[in-house]
Amino acid sequence: MSDMMRTPFGLDQSGDSTCVFRMPVDDATVPDLMKNVQANTPVLTIIKGPQTGNTFELEGAETTIGRDPSNGIFLNDMTVSRAHAKIIRNAAGVLIEDLGSLNGTWVDGAIVNSAPLHDGSSVQIGTFTLIYHESQTERIETGE
Image (cartoon, rainbow, N blue to C red; front, side, top):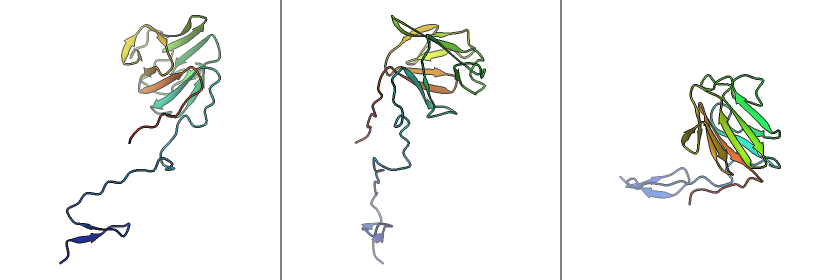
């Protein structure tokens, strides 16, 4: 009996070897969540959670975030308070404030009452993780 096996790609390999397959960068199954976003104003993009891929433009001086549909950013999940947080834009920059939520607001891994947002800051609200972008977004390639 032969020690050689036929792979689905027609290559002969011994039965003991391990094959490593890499996904092509242009593979259609790999989502590029920021591909179609042209940010002229600051944006928050959900990268983890029930609404992954949604992007919200922060156009006004204040944007509220919460489970109530009347919020500027509506996050429909029980881990989010009805009035969870708000984002304030002014000449000094952009600030996020927690509005006394049950699960808290996290910025870059730390729970905060109030914190400045910078390009690339991560914001966690309930089960949602959002990324804040101030300007034109760039795709960051990962891997080898």
